[in-house]
Length: 317
Image (cartoon, rainbow, N blue to C red):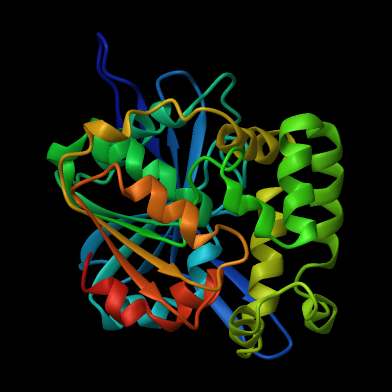
């Protein structure tokens, strides 16, 4: 059975529901992917946070912050067995309004550490590591700046930062430039664009060949991986587009966190051929962070960096 914690005063109310009996199976034409555990946490304001666990239940705890748009299913792109081999217990929460987690009005990056601590409290984790991919990167930075005493390590892979005012953004493919333009100028049309993207995701990889850098295309050719990506994206939009659009809009304005408050090591991995987040933007951002170390891969793109180099990434966790 699940556990419930109720305290008076400023402490929130937590509920973990059926942590050992909720299983999700994704069936593709080429493989079946099994998710080990899912659970829910009811937060102090009544919101529900849903999360999934992968890897070794007794392994080193790592909170995995998914991209945008994405969901708690994203770690399946790497594979449950890979996490287990590295002795990792991956805990991947859906962010507000995505997947099965409740929408949170008026939130910023600075609100996220509160939810992370709530989940850590339920799971009885005093310390833990962080891994943020793509749009999950700034959420790692938020935690590193606000709750460093709880962190064993902080890792960002192909991470996004502020995505509306850097000259390198002009080098992105047209479809990516359009997405960021709509993010800032027409959120409603962005939602339409994302819905259309989700409908076709995971079905015909050949259609993306002209948009994706070759290393990312090759990564999606691994059996079942592109189909998993489709499931992940559609799960992000399970409740509609409001949560996803809000999440992306947060990157198109001044971040509400102080990067200069990060005083602990920040490990960053990025591909030089990333067509989602230009390497030049990452380098300029990290130049202001003396505790950050950057590992670059000259022949990798956005998702290929995560999937092809996880053995090296895992050493930083």
